Each structure stands twice: as C-alpha cells, then as structure tokens.
Length: 224
Image (cartoon, rainbow, N blue to C red; front, side):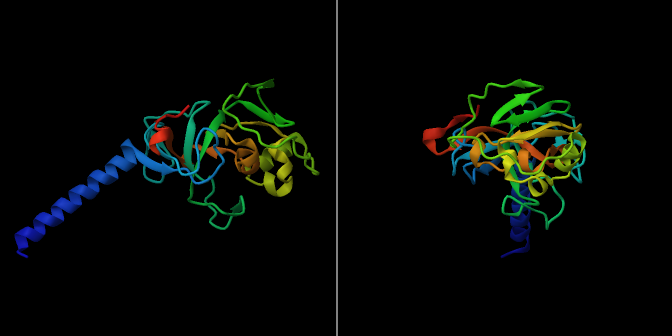
C-alpha cells in the first residue's frame, strides 16, 4: 500500500474515532440495563439512550461541570458508583468505576426516609406510581440504632449497610441530602441496592440522564 493511501486511511480512522468519542461523550451514549432493580420501568436487557451532557459537561477529572445543571426529582440518573476505593465492597462485590442507573428522589436539602417501606419526603408520604413492591410485608427493623447525627455521618460515609444492616431497605433515615449530592433509589424497591444502603450520589460521579429505550422494539419509547 502506498504511503498516501496509508495516510488517508489513518486520517479517516482518526476522524471516525474522534466523531465516535464526541458523540458518546457529549451527545448520546447507550446503556444496557443489567439487573431487575428498575423494574417495571426498565427491564433486564433494555437498552436506553443516555444524555451525557444533561447536567453540563464534565471537565477533566470529573470534579466540575460547565454549564452547571442539577438533577431533579424523578430523573433517571446514570452514574459511576460513588466511591474511589477500588476495594470497597457493596451489593456483594466491588463497584468502583461501574455505571449504575437509579431514580432521583431527593435533592440537596431534602429530608428523606422510609418507614415500613413507605417513602417520605420532608416529612410527608409521597405517591410513587412507578415503585414496585414484591414482598408481602416490610422486612425486619435493623437490630442496630444510631443517634441521628451519627446515622447521617455513617450514611454519607457509605457504611450504613455495614454498620446497620439490610433492614434499612424498609426502615431508613431520616437523613438530609447534602449539598452536591442526590438520593437515588431503584423502582423495584425490594430488589434494588441503592442510596438506602451506600449513601448519596455525589455530583462528580454523575454520568448522564437516561431518556429513551431504543431496544427491544416492543419497548421503544421515552422513559417516565
């Protein structure tokens, strides 16, 4: 192959890679639903389109966004699991660097809680037509209780599942969502490992907003 042809192919491949990187980084990217945690809103194997720049562009290091935008209650948030510790174990395994999808239910300043499986926001029960419950009754209350300030601290430190146990599934909080973070739950409340167990989702881990199912054909449509 002549040198000119090699140069042409190299330039074409480089341009294609640049376009692909630009599209997936700033315009739209695919996300495959890996678990049942968002049923019945999203099924295992559904493929959704995610808007990476829905909350602003991630600058190098992922610590800031421009222009700034904040997730809102009801958004289906895609994020990297909120830890930098590659050895930290949650939900039966190491999660650092993995992409997750959950629904935003609390924004900074909100007080969130679950009592006997009923979600409340700022002290009032919330209607959740999207939430799925499969258990016949709430799970047992955690055997460990903590003072409110300690509970908040342990929750923000991603240690509530370790120090309190799985009873937080139906008996959680109250906690206040800190600045720069959101509270996110799976729609399948009895089959989701989420902010009840491992704490808030901090802004620097947010990767985008899921908006549309494009596969399978029978489920094509905007996500609600």
